[in-house]
Length: 446
Ligand code: SF4
Image (cartoon, rainbow, N blue to C red; front, side, top):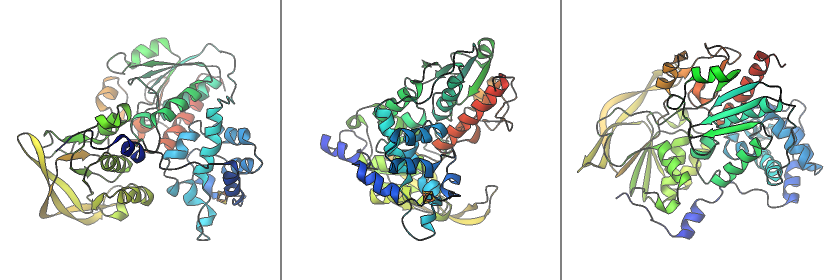
Protein backbone atom coordinates (compact mmCIF):
# COMPACT_ATOMS: atom_id res chain seq x y z
CA UNK A 1 0.00 0.00 0.00
CA UNK A 2 1.23 3.50 -0.78
CA UNK A 3 0.92 5.68 2.29
CA UNK A 4 2.59 8.51 4.18
CA UNK A 5 3.31 9.01 7.88
CA UNK A 6 5.05 5.65 8.26
CA UNK A 7 7.61 6.72 10.88
CA UNK A 8 7.90 8.72 14.08
CA UNK A 9 9.26 12.28 13.97
CA UNK A 10 12.52 11.01 15.53
CA UNK A 11 12.90 8.31 12.88
CA UNK A 12 12.37 10.79 10.05
CA UNK A 13 14.95 13.09 11.58
CA UNK A 14 17.49 10.30 12.07
CA UNK A 15 16.96 8.89 8.55
CA UNK A 16 17.40 12.26 6.88
CA UNK A 17 20.24 13.71 8.94
CA UNK A 18 23.51 14.66 7.25
CA UNK A 19 25.23 11.60 5.76
CA UNK A 20 28.69 13.25 5.77
CA UNK A 21 29.31 14.62 9.25
CA UNK A 22 31.60 17.66 9.13
CA UNK A 23 34.82 17.97 11.14
CA UNK A 24 33.55 18.78 14.60
CA UNK A 25 36.55 20.85 15.61
CA UNK A 26 39.42 22.80 14.14
CA UNK A 27 42.08 20.35 15.38
CA UNK A 28 40.49 17.44 13.49
CA UNK A 29 40.49 19.48 10.27
CA UNK A 30 44.12 20.56 10.77
CA UNK A 31 45.26 17.00 11.50
CA UNK A 32 43.64 15.77 8.27
CA UNK A 33 45.02 18.75 6.31
CA UNK A 34 48.51 17.96 7.59
CA UNK A 35 48.34 14.49 6.00
CA UNK A 36 48.40 16.18 2.55
CA UNK A 37 51.71 15.81 0.74
CA UNK A 38 51.11 19.08 -1.19
CA UNK A 39 52.13 17.28 -4.36
CA UNK A 40 53.76 19.59 -6.84
CA UNK A 41 51.86 18.18 -9.84
CA UNK A 42 48.72 17.63 -7.68
CA UNK A 43 46.72 14.95 -9.50
CA UNK A 44 43.72 15.81 -7.31
CA UNK A 45 43.36 19.15 -9.18
CA UNK A 46 43.15 17.31 -12.50
CA UNK A 47 40.29 15.27 -11.04
CA UNK A 48 38.27 18.43 -10.30
CA UNK A 49 36.20 19.71 -13.26
CA UNK A 50 36.48 23.24 -11.80
CA UNK A 51 40.27 22.90 -11.17
CA UNK A 52 40.20 24.05 -7.54
CA UNK A 53 43.77 24.49 -6.26
CA UNK A 54 43.33 21.72 -3.71
CA UNK A 55 46.80 21.61 -2.12
CA UNK A 56 46.67 25.39 -1.71
CA UNK A 57 43.35 25.46 0.13
CA UNK A 58 44.42 22.52 2.28
CA UNK A 59 47.71 24.24 3.12
CA UNK A 60 45.74 27.36 4.13
CA UNK A 61 43.76 25.23 6.58
CA UNK A 62 46.98 24.02 8.22
CA UNK A 63 47.90 27.66 8.89
CA UNK A 64 44.38 28.44 10.12
CA UNK A 65 43.83 30.81 7.22
CA UNK A 66 40.22 29.75 6.71
CA UNK A 67 39.22 32.89 4.82
CA UNK A 68 42.10 32.39 2.39
CA UNK A 69 41.22 28.72 2.05
CA UNK A 70 37.58 29.53 1.23
CA UNK A 71 38.72 32.14 -1.28
CA UNK A 72 40.92 29.56 -3.02
CA UNK A 73 37.87 27.28 -3.31
CA UNK A 74 35.36 29.93 -4.38
CA UNK A 75 37.59 31.58 -6.96
CA UNK A 76 37.36 28.33 -8.94
CA UNK A 77 33.96 27.13 -7.80
CA UNK A 78 31.43 29.42 -6.16
CA UNK A 79 29.35 26.28 -5.42
CA UNK A 80 32.35 24.83 -3.54
CA UNK A 81 30.33 24.22 -0.38
CA UNK A 82 27.51 22.36 -2.14
CA UNK A 83 29.93 20.44 -4.34
CA UNK A 84 31.79 19.25 -1.24
CA UNK A 85 28.59 17.45 -0.26
CA UNK A 86 27.26 16.14 -3.56
CA UNK A 87 30.30 15.49 -5.78
CA UNK A 88 31.16 11.83 -6.40
CA UNK A 89 34.64 12.61 -5.07
CA UNK A 90 35.72 8.99 -5.17
CA UNK A 91 35.85 9.29 -8.95
CA UNK A 92 37.02 12.95 -8.97
CA UNK A 93 39.54 14.67 -6.62
CA UNK A 94 39.80 12.01 -3.92
CA UNK A 95 39.92 9.26 -6.53
CA UNK A 96 43.00 10.98 -8.00
CA UNK A 97 44.82 11.56 -4.69
CA UNK A 98 48.28 9.94 -4.66
CA UNK A 99 47.47 8.18 -1.40
CA UNK A 100 45.38 5.75 -3.49
CA UNK A 101 48.60 4.60 -5.19
CA UNK A 102 50.11 4.01 -1.76
CA UNK A 103 47.00 1.98 -0.94
CA UNK A 104 46.18 4.36 1.87
CA UNK A 105 43.03 6.36 2.52
CA UNK A 106 43.02 9.45 0.26
CA UNK A 107 42.96 12.90 1.84
CA UNK A 108 39.40 13.82 2.83
CA UNK A 109 39.36 16.67 0.33
CA UNK A 110 35.58 17.08 0.27
CA UNK A 111 35.34 17.25 4.04
CA UNK A 112 38.14 19.83 4.21
CA UNK A 113 36.52 21.83 1.41
CA UNK A 114 33.26 21.73 3.30
CA UNK A 115 35.05 22.88 6.46
CA UNK A 116 36.40 26.14 4.98
CA UNK A 117 33.49 26.94 2.66
CA UNK A 118 30.79 26.41 5.28
CA UNK A 119 32.56 28.70 7.75
CA UNK A 120 32.76 31.35 5.00
CA UNK A 121 29.05 31.04 4.19
CA UNK A 122 28.03 31.01 7.86
CA UNK A 123 29.98 34.26 8.37
CA UNK A 124 28.87 35.67 5.01
CA UNK A 125 32.46 36.50 4.09
CA UNK A 126 31.93 38.12 0.69
CA UNK A 127 35.33 37.79 -0.98
CA UNK A 128 34.68 39.19 -4.41
CA UNK A 129 34.08 42.78 -5.21
CA UNK A 130 31.74 43.75 -8.00
CA UNK A 131 33.25 46.15 -10.53
CA UNK A 132 31.21 49.34 -11.12
CA UNK A 133 28.13 48.80 -13.28
CA UNK A 134 29.16 48.91 -16.96
CA UNK A 135 25.66 49.23 -18.39
CA UNK A 136 25.59 45.72 -19.90
CA UNK A 137 22.66 43.43 -19.18
CA UNK A 138 22.62 39.64 -19.43
CA UNK A 139 19.62 37.30 -19.05
CA UNK A 140 20.09 33.79 -17.71
CA UNK A 141 17.50 31.05 -17.98
CA UNK A 142 17.68 28.76 -14.95
CA UNK A 143 18.99 29.52 -11.44
CA UNK A 144 20.76 26.19 -11.03
CA UNK A 145 24.51 25.59 -10.62
CA UNK A 146 25.27 26.53 -14.27
CA UNK A 147 23.15 29.70 -14.22
CA UNK A 148 24.32 30.92 -10.81
CA UNK A 149 28.02 30.28 -11.44
CA UNK A 150 27.70 32.14 -14.75
CA UNK A 151 25.78 34.96 -13.00
CA UNK A 152 28.39 35.33 -10.25
CA UNK A 153 31.27 35.80 -12.69
CA UNK A 154 29.27 38.20 -14.88
CA UNK A 155 28.26 40.22 -11.85
CA UNK A 156 31.88 40.47 -10.72
CA UNK A 157 32.57 42.15 -14.07
CA UNK A 158 29.93 44.81 -13.36
CA UNK A 159 27.25 43.28 -15.62
CA UNK A 160 23.61 43.44 -14.45
CA UNK A 161 22.24 39.90 -14.47
CA UNK A 162 18.60 38.82 -14.45
CA UNK A 163 17.90 35.13 -13.93
CA UNK A 164 14.55 33.64 -14.97
CA UNK A 165 13.76 30.60 -12.81
CA UNK A 166 10.70 28.40 -13.31
CA UNK A 167 10.57 27.24 -9.67
CA UNK A 168 9.88 29.30 -6.57
CA UNK A 169 13.42 28.76 -5.24
CA UNK A 170 16.86 28.94 -6.83
CA UNK A 171 19.56 26.24 -6.81
CA UNK A 172 18.14 23.92 -9.48
CA UNK A 173 19.14 20.31 -8.99
CA UNK A 174 20.91 21.19 -5.71
CA UNK A 175 17.67 22.52 -4.25
CA UNK A 176 15.19 20.12 -5.83
CA UNK A 177 16.90 17.01 -7.17
CA UNK A 178 19.35 15.63 -4.59
CA UNK A 179 18.72 13.48 -1.53
CA UNK A 180 17.91 15.57 1.54
CA UNK A 181 20.47 13.70 3.66
CA UNK A 182 23.23 15.01 1.34
CA UNK A 183 22.17 18.66 1.24
CA UNK A 184 19.33 20.12 3.27
CA UNK A 185 16.93 22.69 1.77
CA UNK A 186 18.19 25.23 4.36
CA UNK A 187 21.79 24.71 3.28
CA UNK A 188 20.80 25.23 -0.38
CA UNK A 189 18.94 28.45 0.47
CA UNK A 190 21.98 29.77 2.40
CA UNK A 191 24.34 28.89 -0.46
CA UNK A 192 22.13 30.69 -3.01
CA UNK A 193 21.92 33.76 -0.73
CA UNK A 194 25.69 33.72 -0.37
CA UNK A 195 26.24 33.55 -4.14
CA UNK A 196 23.74 36.28 -4.94
CA UNK A 197 25.07 38.33 -1.98
CA UNK A 198 27.66 39.83 -4.33
CA UNK A 199 24.85 42.02 -5.73
CA UNK A 200 23.88 42.75 -9.30
CA UNK A 201 21.97 39.46 -9.65
CA UNK A 202 18.19 39.68 -9.77
CA UNK A 203 16.12 36.47 -9.87
CA UNK A 204 12.62 36.43 -11.40
CA UNK A 205 10.96 33.37 -9.87
CA UNK A 206 8.23 31.23 -11.45
CA UNK A 207 9.04 32.45 -14.94
CA UNK A 208 9.38 29.72 -17.56
CA UNK A 209 10.94 29.88 -20.97
CA UNK A 210 8.30 28.84 -23.49
CA UNK A 211 5.41 29.81 -21.21
CA UNK A 212 6.11 33.30 -19.91
CA UNK A 213 8.69 34.52 -22.43
CA UNK A 214 10.69 33.50 -25.50
CA UNK A 215 14.36 33.84 -26.31
CA UNK A 216 13.30 36.49 -28.85
CA UNK A 217 11.77 38.56 -26.02
CA UNK A 218 15.04 38.37 -24.08
CA UNK A 219 17.14 39.28 -27.14
CA UNK A 220 15.23 42.57 -27.39
CA UNK A 221 16.06 43.56 -23.80
CA UNK A 222 19.45 42.03 -23.03
CA UNK A 223 22.95 42.20 -24.51
CA UNK A 224 23.51 38.44 -24.17
CA UNK A 225 21.70 35.35 -22.91
CA UNK A 226 22.82 32.17 -21.16
CA UNK A 227 20.61 29.08 -21.28
CA UNK A 228 21.24 26.92 -18.22
CA UNK A 229 17.83 25.41 -17.65
CA UNK A 230 18.99 21.83 -17.10
CA UNK A 231 16.83 18.87 -18.00
CA UNK A 232 13.26 17.91 -17.19
CA UNK A 233 11.42 14.87 -15.92
CA UNK A 234 12.45 11.22 -16.10
CA UNK A 235 12.66 9.47 -19.44
CA UNK A 236 9.51 7.46 -20.22
CA UNK A 237 9.83 3.69 -20.01
CA UNK A 238 7.40 3.22 -22.93
CA UNK A 239 6.04 -0.03 -21.53
CA UNK A 240 2.44 -1.06 -20.79
CA UNK A 241 1.15 0.01 -17.38
CA UNK A 242 3.20 3.18 -17.11
CA UNK A 243 0.01 5.18 -16.46
CA UNK A 244 -0.99 3.12 -13.38
CA UNK A 245 -1.31 4.75 -9.98
CA UNK A 246 1.94 4.11 -8.11
CA UNK A 247 4.26 4.79 -11.05
CA UNK A 248 6.35 7.78 -10.04
CA UNK A 249 9.01 9.92 -11.64
CA UNK A 250 12.23 9.92 -9.56
CA UNK A 251 12.78 13.64 -10.00
CA UNK A 252 9.22 14.43 -8.99
CA UNK A 253 9.55 12.08 -6.00
CA UNK A 254 12.78 13.73 -4.82
CA UNK A 255 11.31 17.18 -5.52
CA UNK A 256 8.31 16.42 -3.27
CA UNK A 257 10.63 15.22 -0.53
CA UNK A 258 12.56 18.44 -0.65
CA UNK A 259 9.63 20.81 -0.70
CA UNK A 260 7.24 19.18 1.83
CA UNK A 261 7.17 17.73 5.33
CA UNK A 262 8.79 14.27 5.19
CA UNK A 263 5.83 12.68 6.99
CA UNK A 264 3.51 13.87 4.20
CA UNK A 265 5.40 11.95 1.48
CA UNK A 266 3.71 8.68 0.53
CA UNK A 267 5.77 5.61 -0.33
CA UNK A 268 4.88 2.00 -1.14
CA UNK A 269 5.49 -1.13 0.94
CA UNK A 270 7.51 -2.66 -1.89
CA UNK A 271 9.16 -0.29 -4.30
CA UNK A 272 11.01 -0.95 -7.58
CA UNK A 273 13.43 1.72 -8.81
CA UNK A 274 14.42 1.60 -12.49
CA UNK A 275 18.00 2.74 -13.10
CA UNK A 276 21.38 2.85 -11.34
CA UNK A 277 22.42 6.50 -11.70
CA UNK A 278 22.76 8.97 -8.85
CA UNK A 279 19.10 9.98 -9.08
CA UNK A 280 18.05 6.31 -8.89
CA UNK A 281 20.22 5.83 -5.79
CA UNK A 282 18.79 8.99 -4.19
CA UNK A 283 15.21 7.84 -4.93
CA UNK A 284 15.82 4.28 -3.67
CA UNK A 285 17.58 5.24 -0.44
CA UNK A 286 15.01 7.91 0.36
CA UNK A 287 12.11 5.53 -0.32
CA UNK A 288 13.72 3.15 2.20
CA UNK A 289 14.35 5.96 4.66
CA UNK A 290 10.69 7.03 4.36
CA UNK A 291 9.72 3.56 5.61
CA UNK A 292 9.27 1.35 2.51
CA UNK A 293 9.66 -2.28 3.59
CA UNK A 294 11.48 -3.43 0.45
CA UNK A 295 13.24 -1.42 -2.24
CA UNK A 296 14.62 -3.19 -5.31
CA UNK A 297 16.76 -1.45 -7.90
CA UNK A 298 16.57 -2.80 -11.46
CA UNK A 299 19.42 -2.24 -13.90
CA UNK A 300 19.68 -3.66 -17.40
CA UNK A 301 23.47 -3.95 -17.40
CA UNK A 302 25.93 -5.18 -14.74
CA UNK A 303 27.81 -3.49 -11.91
CA UNK A 304 30.75 -2.82 -14.29
CA UNK A 305 28.58 -0.53 -16.44
CA UNK A 306 26.52 1.21 -13.72
CA UNK A 307 26.61 5.03 -13.89
CA UNK A 308 26.72 5.58 -10.11
CA UNK A 309 29.91 5.15 -8.09
CA UNK A 310 30.67 2.24 -5.78
CA UNK A 311 30.29 4.63 -2.83
CA UNK A 312 26.77 5.61 -3.92
CA UNK A 313 25.82 1.97 -4.45
CA UNK A 314 27.15 1.14 -0.99
CA UNK A 315 24.82 3.76 0.51
CA UNK A 316 21.87 2.00 -1.12
CA UNK A 317 23.06 -1.44 0.02
CA UNK A 318 23.69 -0.22 3.58
CA UNK A 319 20.15 1.16 3.60
CA UNK A 320 18.93 -2.34 2.77
CA UNK A 321 18.04 -1.81 -0.90
CA UNK A 322 18.33 -4.85 -3.18
CA UNK A 323 19.82 -4.67 -6.65
CA UNK A 324 18.89 -6.91 -9.57
CA UNK A 325 21.44 -6.70 -12.39
CA UNK A 326 20.70 -7.58 -16.01
CA UNK A 327 16.97 -6.89 -15.76
CA UNK A 328 14.85 -4.48 -17.81
CA UNK A 329 11.25 -3.42 -17.13
CA UNK A 330 8.84 -5.04 -19.61
CA UNK A 331 5.38 -4.35 -18.19
CA UNK A 332 3.86 -2.81 -15.08
CA UNK A 333 0.79 -4.74 -13.98
CA UNK A 334 -2.01 -3.57 -11.72
CA UNK A 335 -5.42 -4.18 -10.22
CA UNK A 336 -8.13 -1.49 -10.13
CA UNK A 337 -5.73 1.00 -11.67
CA UNK A 338 -3.02 0.52 -9.02
CA UNK A 339 0.40 -1.06 -9.41
CA UNK A 340 0.70 -4.65 -8.14
CA UNK A 341 3.76 -5.90 -9.98
CA UNK A 342 6.59 -5.33 -12.39
CA UNK A 343 7.41 -7.86 -15.12
CA UNK A 344 11.10 -7.71 -16.03
CA UNK A 345 13.05 -9.20 -18.92
CA UNK A 346 16.23 -11.05 -18.04
CA UNK A 347 19.07 -9.53 -20.05
CA UNK A 348 22.57 -10.56 -21.03
CA UNK A 349 25.42 -8.37 -22.28
CA UNK A 350 26.03 -8.11 -26.02
CA UNK A 351 28.46 -5.98 -28.05
CA UNK A 352 29.53 -2.47 -26.97
CA UNK A 353 27.17 0.37 -28.05
CA UNK A 354 28.05 3.90 -29.24
CA UNK A 355 29.05 4.90 -25.67
CA UNK A 356 31.50 1.96 -25.50
CA UNK A 357 29.41 0.14 -22.90
CA UNK A 358 28.24 -3.39 -23.71
CA UNK A 359 24.59 -3.35 -24.77
CA UNK A 360 22.03 -5.38 -22.88
CA UNK A 361 20.24 -8.03 -24.98
CA UNK A 362 16.89 -9.60 -24.06
CA UNK A 363 17.21 -13.33 -23.28
CA UNK A 364 13.45 -13.86 -23.76
CA UNK A 365 13.05 -14.99 -20.14
CA UNK A 366 11.08 -12.91 -17.63
CA UNK A 367 10.38 -12.71 -13.92
CA UNK A 368 7.81 -10.76 -11.91
CA UNK A 369 8.39 -8.60 -8.86
CA UNK A 370 5.50 -8.01 -6.51
CA UNK A 371 5.58 -4.23 -5.94
CA UNK A 372 3.09 -1.45 -5.28
CA UNK A 373 5.27 1.45 -6.42
CA UNK A 374 7.59 1.88 -9.41
CA UNK A 375 10.00 4.83 -9.53
CA UNK A 376 11.41 5.72 -12.94
CA UNK A 377 15.02 6.93 -12.84
CA UNK A 378 16.47 5.88 -16.18
CA UNK A 379 17.73 9.32 -17.25
CA UNK A 380 15.99 12.65 -17.75
CA UNK A 381 14.59 14.29 -20.84
CA UNK A 382 15.90 17.59 -22.19
CA UNK A 383 13.40 20.37 -22.91
CA UNK A 384 13.26 19.50 -26.61
CA UNK A 385 9.98 21.28 -27.44
CA UNK A 386 11.03 24.53 -25.79
CA UNK A 387 14.43 24.49 -27.45
CA UNK A 388 12.94 23.73 -30.88
CA UNK A 389 10.19 26.36 -30.54
CA UNK A 390 12.86 28.97 -29.89
CA UNK A 391 14.84 27.94 -32.99
CA UNK A 392 17.85 26.79 -30.99
CA UNK A 393 19.78 24.05 -32.79
CA UNK A 394 19.89 20.83 -30.81
CA UNK A 395 20.57 17.08 -30.85
CA UNK A 396 17.47 15.28 -29.56
CA UNK A 397 16.76 18.24 -27.29
CA UNK A 398 20.35 18.77 -26.11
CA UNK A 399 21.38 22.28 -27.10
CA UNK A 400 24.20 22.37 -29.65
CA UNK A 401 27.05 24.75 -28.81
CA UNK A 402 30.43 25.59 -30.31
CA UNK A 403 33.77 25.62 -28.46
CA UNK A 404 32.93 29.03 -26.98
CA UNK A 405 29.61 27.76 -25.62
CA UNK A 406 27.66 29.75 -28.24
CA UNK A 407 24.42 28.45 -29.77
CA UNK A 408 23.32 29.17 -33.34
CA UNK A 409 21.51 32.33 -32.11
CA UNK A 410 23.39 35.63 -31.93
CA UNK A 411 24.56 36.37 -28.38
CA UNK A 412 22.89 33.25 -26.96
CA UNK A 413 25.11 30.84 -25.00
CA UNK A 414 24.28 27.58 -23.24
CA UNK A 415 25.83 25.06 -20.87
CA UNK A 416 25.28 22.44 -18.19
CA UNK A 417 22.71 19.66 -18.32
CA UNK A 418 20.73 21.44 -21.08
CA UNK A 419 23.75 20.75 -23.31
CA UNK A 420 25.21 17.50 -21.96
CA UNK A 421 21.91 15.81 -21.02
CA UNK A 422 22.79 15.47 -17.33
CA UNK A 423 26.18 15.30 -15.63
CA UNK A 424 27.45 16.28 -12.20
CA UNK A 425 26.71 19.58 -10.43
CA UNK A 426 30.41 20.44 -10.65
CA UNK A 427 30.34 20.03 -14.46
CA UNK A 428 27.46 22.50 -14.62
CA UNK A 429 29.40 24.98 -12.47
CA UNK A 430 32.34 24.79 -14.88
CA UNK A 431 30.03 25.18 -17.90
CA UNK A 432 28.61 28.36 -16.31
CA UNK A 433 32.15 29.69 -15.79
CA UNK A 434 33.13 28.91 -19.39
CA UNK A 435 30.03 30.59 -20.78
CA UNK A 436 30.60 33.67 -18.60
CA UNK A 437 34.14 34.01 -19.99
CA UNK A 438 32.78 33.82 -23.56
CA UNK A 439 30.00 36.33 -22.83
CA UNK A 440 32.52 38.79 -21.33
CA UNK A 441 34.55 38.52 -24.54
CA UNK A 442 31.42 38.83 -26.69
CA UNK A 443 30.48 42.03 -24.86
CA UNK A 444 34.05 43.25 -25.45
CA UNK A 445 34.70 43.68 -21.74
CA UNK A 446 37.75 41.42 -21.67
FE1 SF4 B 1 47.28 16.34 -1.20
FE2 SF4 B 1 46.35 14.01 -2.31
FE3 SF4 B 1 46.24 16.30 -3.74
FE4 SF4 B 1 48.64 15.16 -3.20
S1 SF4 B 1 46.98 14.32 -4.47
S2 SF4 B 1 48.11 17.37 -3.07
S3 SF4 B 1 48.24 14.30 -1.14
S4 SF4 B 1 45.15 15.87 -1.80
